[in-house]
Length: 445
Image (cartoon, rainbow, N blue to C red; front, side):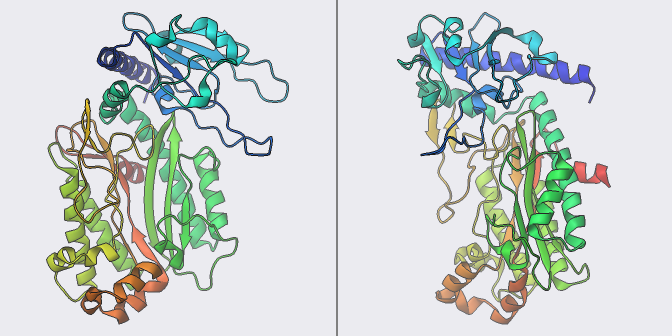
């Protein structure tokens, strides 16, 4: 993408945010939107700060990810204002002056101390919708303490699900980075690296360290792949090495990629065939990311498809419909089919009934689904089916009435491999879905 194209997409993005903000402020009865970038958090009884995470409501406007103490002000009918903290600080690297195509869309004021921002914010804080965390308040009396008015948040968060073309372009770039990392991680796995070594290879290829990544990478060899959020990263590889599951993303301009792949060391093994079957099912699910589709139904259909895979490989002895009806499928597929993706990995308003509030419930018996809305053009979602042979889930299954529907010898054969998860990032359009992840894998070769 050329710089000019990016610039024009960003300009249109700001126009969209400006229009949304005007409606949100009218809903809440406010004159200004004020958004702090956030502040550093310090560890209890220590002088060390936690890794800084920028306020998502702030980075929606500006691609600034490491600028605590800054503020964004949007007032209908006026150019948005950026109050940019550039402290005099010989202990740390001082942020450079704002630069790039985006700066032409803002009135920018540079301040040297956090409290100096007070001079450049609206005079009457009571007329402001201030979105952020409590500790962003300024001065000894806590001026401009965030009030997070619900009508404003409801409107802005609901419409964040509909990505602008600029946002889709940024998500594509994040996918490009992450795919590069996944390729490097697979090479490290096949070369015999440990989980920790694979993690380092991934970070090197992506060009981001652990604190830059949008979430903690899941780097799992063998049975560790059955732990849904495994984050231990052993320093030595197991013997023998059988399988590898990597759930790892990357960031670009504040937007996140979230990709999972599973590999068998032996490409001719039955476990590789099992991976391939889940992969085929996942591709069919990605094709369902179309306007008007209820994401809840997509999740339920995924249970049927994955139960079919379990039946095909002899893990269960009943049909797919019975496996879903009895809850058996949830013993192997215990999480949701995916979630919204954007400025946050688990993007906001996944259950929102409308931009005025309310929520859409989850299907009964499926407590971990993170998105229940009807899909529409502009939405970007993850599709991440998985089948696992996890100890706790299997123990509960063995003690249940559904135990009779399982071939436990087949389970024992797959158990050392942990599990399979395949995850892509997919854009809903007016027509066929756009699979950002597969396109970037294909481009890389």
